[in-house]
Length: 78
Image (cartoon, rainbow, N blue to C red; front, side, top):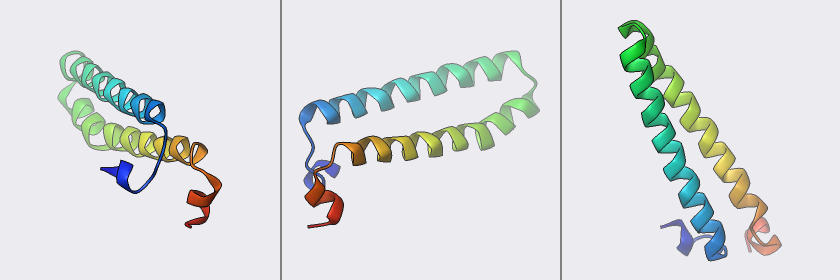
């Protein structure tokens, strides 16, 4: 989807895709751990606040990663 708007080498997209896949798998494992080993109130807080914050931070880091690999023309919006 974003490849039409931002032109980056295929390796950059592949790494970003793999990073998101690993991130979601890690979130799933963390969710299972918290769900089965912590009280329900902790799990609810983790789901609502913890995973939301982690996703926001990872999204920002993805933006930084994309920005680092953009050409100067793309950075200037030309």
